[in-house]
Image (tube, rainbow, N blue to C red; front, side, top):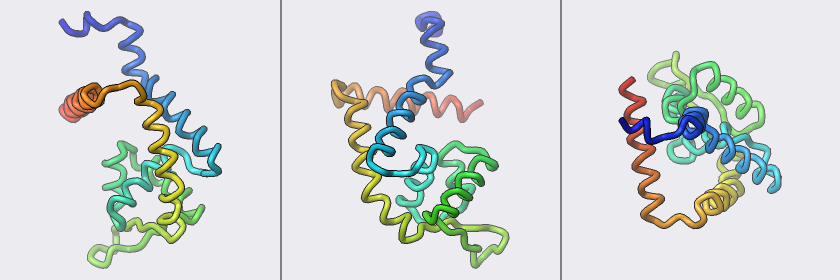
Length: 148
């Protein structure tokens, strides 16, 4: 069985998200160092809006893996800080669409170079093939999670 090939410590690290916790910490530290007052979670929401502005809270929650209460809090804070605004959907007034404000659009120019730098630092020494392997492994794990 493949799980026998993975040590108990490695299983804990994988399921406990240790790698992601450390990467998140590094990203947050780099943001602060560059005067960016966003958390990693806020950044992931803004990333979705930079890709497609004017989407629903549920679409953002699904894309980021956040539950409804967490997403509501994140959006409340981003709205309070002036990065986003909620607007009623013209077709369905029960649905709020999330739009970037001017501040939300402009912060991308400051944030993305820092995020790219962190990603470059975290993947230093990995070949393109190794990065592709990691990507494929994560996609398979995400797929398996979707089946549960």
